[in-house]
Length: 173
Image (cartoon, rainbow, N blue to C red; front, side, top):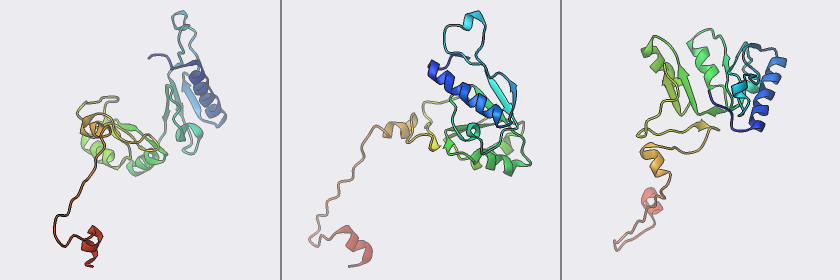
């Protein structure tokens, strides 16, 4: 795992960790700056796992942009899908299970730009990539990504003698 982008980002991640602990979530591992000598250069932060985090908590609702994962229990598949969709962000998600048929059904119900099944972070140049909700506008990669760099325009010429505004045709004027 590499370092974070900057010292200020590492401090922001540390802030998420400290506030989440105060809110009663259980810190399972990580949550601090590593002390190993070979990690002194760079803005490293330990991979961090929380359990028992509330869905309305800051960390559950925001993008921390750091190595933090929240592991929560759910009653059934519908509750898991609702939990996954209970966020203003929706760049990507992943489903881990031995039942890939069920995973496909779940993936269809998760609102996200990409849903991986039993993997994470895989991209294909021919497939569009981009988020939903507040996780970005537009797409990258694929035909859809290419079209983001174009400006589509319709130029319509009516050469008939009875040329009328298009709206007239729609409403029968």
